[in-house]
Length: 296
Image 1 (cartoon, rainbow, N blue to C red):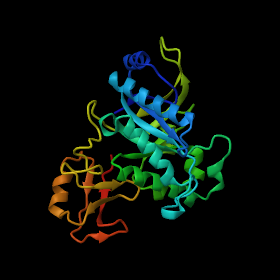
Image 2 (image 1 turned 180 degrees about the vertical axis):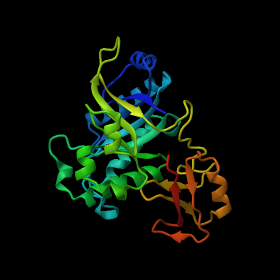
Image 3 (image 1 turned 90 degrees about the vertical axis):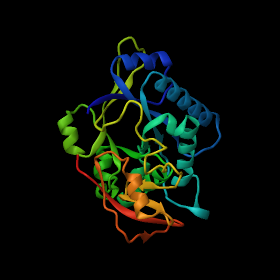
Image 4 (image 1 turned 135 degrees about the vertical axis):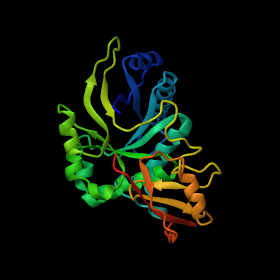
């Protein structure tokens, strides 16, 4: 189903969100954070702008997701974590998302935006390194209970990522001045397409990047924290999906029968292969079940 959306990194009033809604906009990706936390006035202003936009957009019935502008250059953990580590940045991203209402307000994916602007920082890394950074973000986001998504253009698709190693990670693809067919040929698995920038809307002074969405979602509920596996079960058990590896993680105490019951609430485009023999992974007290997703 095709839906019209915008993405924003600036303050938008409730009245403007209302005008966008009246002109067919049904969803929006809103900038939540950038880089690592430094408690600066810029950090605080960005956080408040994000919170205000989420509240204003959702008050007008527009579904929202969030994006983080990345500066991370490594996937260091533990004592090796530094300000350019994914772990440092994703904590900022998630804290802003939770401050804006978390699961109750943000129903669309949380997006990793690894653009370069002018310094080409990700062009200095190998495809493997960039792919690992994207996967580390996606895993952390999924573990926190949100569905991850990667923003990319065709340059990055070809030159910066090993696309085959990104699994079922949702993609928000940016290519402008081209047709949908051409965009789909370039990125066949895109869930969102950014096809125009600085587009005007009637009686609106600001201009917006414009997108289309190709996944189904309810106007009232998408990734519901109370029932969507990959977030938590109703009992609060930490079951979550790693979308980049096509795996679902469960606690040691979770039985196969409980897992099957939990998965019944998933939409019909998912199919799971549940093996009675669990494979223990690095994560403490958790096992993994491999899953597959049906073709659309």
